[in-house]
Length: 338
Image: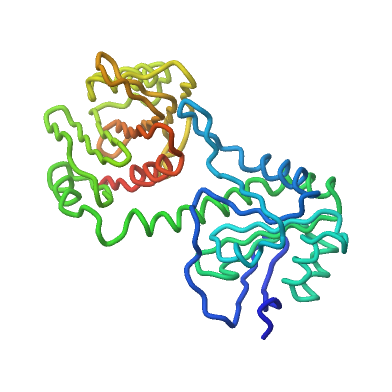
């Protein structure tokens, strides 16, 4: 079998391709917050406009930081990047003089290429050149045709990359080397359990005040969990006040900033919840620190308890979004008996 002609099973209405190659594959490489975009220089402005309208998630640290870094390169570099974990190949106007168009034509079997030319300009593939790889092809007849797909496909495309990130990161942070001794201790003391990655340790356990505080260095990260025997989630004002006061009452030398503070309704493990995001900062200390935080408030109806899950990071001058997304996965791993 030619290495460039792939046997493919695909669905256009829900465009996921399953591509099988005869060659042996290794696990895909590359950072999970990077997407390699392969297109010609002339198509880059349109492709960039399209992708930036989809990947809009931004973390304020307080500087704005995207969840995904889009890294563009010419089609001639395809062989160097084909084993990256997230690859997009894009071409506009289906012109034989366009190297991106020719690359797509080279990679797809003739019948699939013809079907794509006449139909959906976007398709997805899994594990094309490596395991745990997400592969996206954009082959649009025009700029207008491509941009018209934003509304219909935005959520679907975002979901593919979210699942890709989650799948790869779950293997990384919840491997066999978790801190299972600490997990067992918390389960024994409090009844609920949470998955704790390697490198995390206890800072404080306060049974009387129903508070657990764990931390990790390199980079500096905290998770705080508390609960109270009442329901406050139905009152937005009460929730907001509780979240605002909580860091100082529990961490002691930390407060929240007005800058970019948001409180919105959300879901947490299929439960109605409140989600607060923004910036934290130290108070009354010589070595000033700060960074992004996130809090969830949800009601455990079975046990009549309101839980507060808080996490934050201090990692100045470096990307924080990937760590914040990891922290979100950790707090969502909590399991409360019913």
